[in-house]
Length: 408
Image (cartoon, rainbow, N blue to C red; front, side):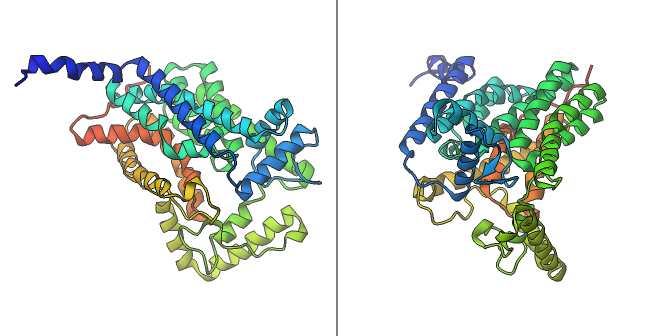
């Protein structure tokens, strides 16, 4: 029988690897190769309807025709992803595959960022790298790279933005505050749900009496959203962040709506009246239904807020990687991580990183509760939740997360 001294080297070697910075490079490379394999393996899959919108707007931008679908200006989709697609198409031609490859590469930064977030929570190097590992091989984010949805751009910008907010607050650095604002502004420009993220982050930072940092994050971070609303007023005569709110509200407020129905229900507005009028018409119809069925709407809102943590959803019958048995297993395997992530947020409540993360997650929960819940709405928060999941697991085994240090 081997003694402790004889077994210790065999045990310490993998732990030494896991806690090293070299492990992060392994995650970045291996995760990227996995995502590239998925992108290349699914390049002939049928695109979702929403993806066609992003493709058409990106094509219009690449041809110098502006943010349009056909002959009409649009504000139905947020601007960041179509502009990214437009830039790629302008350089490489109409190549959606290049956009997806770029997204697969983009996520390579997250293991390094999530390791630093684990350090912020006082996790051991091994635990912090475990959080980074969960992120590097996150199945839903890997799958998102195979689409033209703005999920990857939003995820990267949001995660980096929240990390920079924490750094700017603790180091009291204006440059970091500007960078944090740029990242959060990009996240909001990619997915409208996160448009107020910079505002909420500024509140958290101001609470810690970093008023200059808070002001910079607020001004820089909200500028893209305000600029986009001004653009919508000029070209569409509607000072709104998007023209999809009415339809989403109606999809979640009708007799057939369920907590997981998403856009299975067809909206009833008249599309011939134009995008702005249709949005207002559908919003009116939804509000009328809510007024008539307040109890049912409240029930749907509560259940949809819980459905945010469902990683499978109820996708359309379009066949693809997302409909297979492996996808079903991967989706449900994320549920315990999400539960641990929420627990980690609770036990780390004294750390401002928890409040910054909760602000982003809260936007998803509120938006989904009011309208419709889809798994991809939450995915941008998952890297942060993975880190907090490890913090929650550490607490369960008796290791307390670090309490936030006083700001200098």
